[in-house]
Each structure stands twice: as structure tokens, then as C-alpha cells.
Image (cartoon, rainbow, N blue to C red; front, top):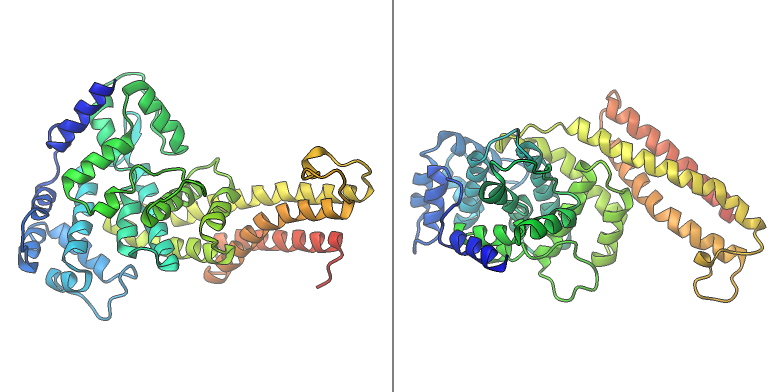
Length: 393
């Protein structure tokens, strides 16, 4: 298995067996190795593809870059974005054009790009808040974080029978299956491919890191941000993803307040369709928002049951071991505070996000009406907790 996996990586490093990139993408790859490349050199390559040119200009004029004035030429776009950043952005758009859309065998390309675009926008927003790395690098890092799965499919799975659907979440499940069956996973392939294509070292270095915890040791800041963006993207796109997991992790690692995380989620919903148009991916913001609200509603229902049961704790004489915190004795009041704290965190996250979203939506829209229900339910739970704990507003 090891020799087989090394053989695959060696072939990738030499450029063999990779999917055929578009002619423009190949020229952009070659430019990475050209010394003293000029703005005119890059503009000449990009302008050979009118569709790519239009999409890059749309991005240059979008909220993504916040340009001071209208940008009408690729040369202007390069001046604003920088030579390397625009080359990488152009290469990313060209990569999207290289692969089909829709579901092909076990791989859903459409879903892949939807997940990737959310990752890109989330990574960019996180980088802007944390200021630990460049937001444009974070955008690209999030966008191509799982690009190795596309190459993995082309190299190892295309044409095979009885291959299960390739789902990016849960990521560990997918990586374990890949290694068990083929002796290599798509992140290892992605690292080799991105090196060959000439992506910046900081972006390539994100590939080995996933499911990062708080005690992992030294991890590049960009890798942390990209992994966090992956989890928040799963919160939006994966139906079974628990609401609180991503919020808790962001708080534990970066001490990001729920209020800030809510701002980030709202901003992503506002930007995603504009970015998706440049990547020729159809995004349904309304549907994604409603799915996320369904998760919030389900989480609130679960919290409501816990709040209802809290009143029984006042009459408890023996506490279960889970509430003893390793101590021989604990008062009912202390036990109550432990459970209340466990409830308040997800309630704060859900309520805060819903309130921010409510302010941005049209009150006549279906989304606003659903969000309003979430806000009212959160307020009702908050009042119930305050009453139980004797807190008065």
C-alpha cells in the first residue's frame, strides 16, 4: 500500500495522470515558474478567455475586495489585487471550469463547489476578524481545501463499480475509508497537486491539518482558520451537523464571542450568491438559510425539554454522578447553575444569530417570518431560565 501511495504522489509531482486543465489554467500554472512576470504577461493570458475576464472583473468590483472605484480592465484589477493574488484567483476560477457540474458517479461536483464557496467566504470573514493571516489567502485556502477529492476520484475511482457516494462530511470518516481502501487520502493528494500547480506554500500547508483540537501543538494560523471554515460550512450544508459544535470550537480555540460568529454567518449569506455567480455555481441562499433555521429550531426544541426538566432539580436529594464534578457534595443550586450554563451557551448562539439575521431580512419574506419564530422561542427560553435562577431583568 505504501509503495502504491508513494507512486501516486510521485506521478502527481511529475504532472502525470492529472486531469487536463483548461489551456488558460495551464498557462497560469506555467507563469508561476516564470521569473519577473509582468502585469501585461498575466493580463494577456487571462484576456484570451472572455468569460474568465468578465468573472474576474466582477470579483474585483465586488464586496470581496471593496475597491475604491470601478475596475474595468484586468490591468486595473491586478493593480488592486496584486499580481500573485489575481493569478491564484484566476487559477481557482479556471479549476472550477476544468471539472463538470452535477453528480457524476459517486461524486457530486455541484455540492463540492457549494461547500467550497461557503468555506472560502467563512475563511475570509474569520481572517478579517482574527487578523492572523491575509483574508485573500484564507479565501483561496478555504475554496480549495478539499480539491484533492476531485483528483482522488479521477485517479482512483472513476469507472469503478459499487463505490459509495463521496461525502465531505464527516471528513474523518471519508479520510479513513480512503486510506483503508487505497492507502492514501485525498488531502495527501491535494497537497501534492497544489504544489505542482504552484499555489502559495501557506495554502498548501493547510492540507495536512483537519479536525484540529485545542491541544494539537503548533498549527499554522491559516490552517486553523480553514479548518474552522470547514466546520461552519458543514453547519450550513450538512443536515446532521449539530448547531453548537462549531461555535464551541471557535470559542475554545480563538475565544471568539458568539456575537462575532453570528456576524460572520450573516455576512456569508449576504455575499455567497454574488461570489457563486463568478464560479458558475447556482446557490440557493434562501433554502440554505431555512435549513440552518431548521437546525436552530431543532436545537431550541431540545433546549426547551431541558429547561422544562430543570424545575425538578430543586426537589432533588441525590444528584447523578455527572453533576458531582468529582466532589463529594454539591448543592442543588450549584447543580442548577451547571445545567443552566450548558443551556445558555447554545441558546446565546442561536438567539444572537437569529436576531442579527432578522435585522437584515425583508419582514415580508418567508425567511424573516421563520427567523422571527426562532427569536421569540429563544426569548421565551431565556425568560424561563431567568425565572428558574431567580434572575430579574
